[in-house]
Image (cartoon, rainbow, N blue to C red):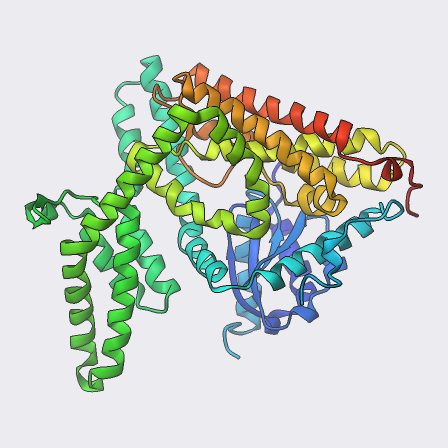
Length: 492
């Protein structure tokens, strides 16, 4: 299948812009692996029905601060620049009781099985979740996502290259090339603290370059000559958590300086005081403290999977879909990044990816059991390829969550898949991912373990996916649809 021509991406952007209320309604634009993330002035101006009906749109997700249009991997990275160009040509977009009677607290009645009704129910559920969960904690998680999500493309690219280099080493092929591949794959990770500092300062309202300057201290080789808490510091100690804390501190110092330093001296004193004060606290406090926390995270993850891998995998795989629905999965991003920085891979992501396998299995069971509901089956058929590649929003919000029971049985499938991967971790087969973002089949090129990209690593991950598919299908087929739903007449 050939990729869409550049003009097609421009046409998609052109079609989407009026559907979200036009350029004047857009306050910010960003994208992650699969979603175009928009800040909107007036949510009421969005034409939801027409937007979801667009062929390029796989789904729509709302959180506390952004309106997210699911376009899929690759496509979103090409549509976003075209969208931004349209905004630029139109002018700068930056100027200018829930539990009672909540429609999301009930699921669809037997007769409401048309794709349109399912989609509407999914939208109602998302809107209700948004209203309930607009808390300071959720906003903090959103900020964490805004810091780390822009780093994902580099993590993926470097992760794939690292996997390729490891494969060549194992096969004893092209020995002259592997050192270059190692340098290419490792360069970003060696300086990831700097990028975290830049993004953190930007997100918290400071000067990005000052946040990056303070975070750079964490990875500077010269810190090895500094002693703190009776120990010699080591370059990289504290990792991304230290860089995050250092940049947040730098933002607070900078804002204090802006309020108290005379304007005539601001250009000289503010950056100097910011870097000096935040830098000293980083060297003599934050690096040590963040290093202890980072080490504890790695130790805890290893201990948990070595001693209770099957149970831990079962629980993590089963709970991940609800975490995604509530937005709490964003708290795991710094943990994944810390593990990748420490160990070269995160052992948690392959387990959490099993939730998507359970979702695919559940959707397949709904497809098989509701044979006469052609509209719903058409929706599932179009969304399944994306689900296999780890893009689960169309199936979650278009099928399983509105129907209710299939969402629970999808979690059951994820639990069994996660338990399968966790069990093999207890038996000594480590399955990790060198980057965060992809899941499903898209995670195969990023797999890693104690022996690198070994056949056993791939086999265990594939076995986990198969287990998730089968368990999600079986649980949904047997328990996911009640008799009233099965016998309901298809909606017109």
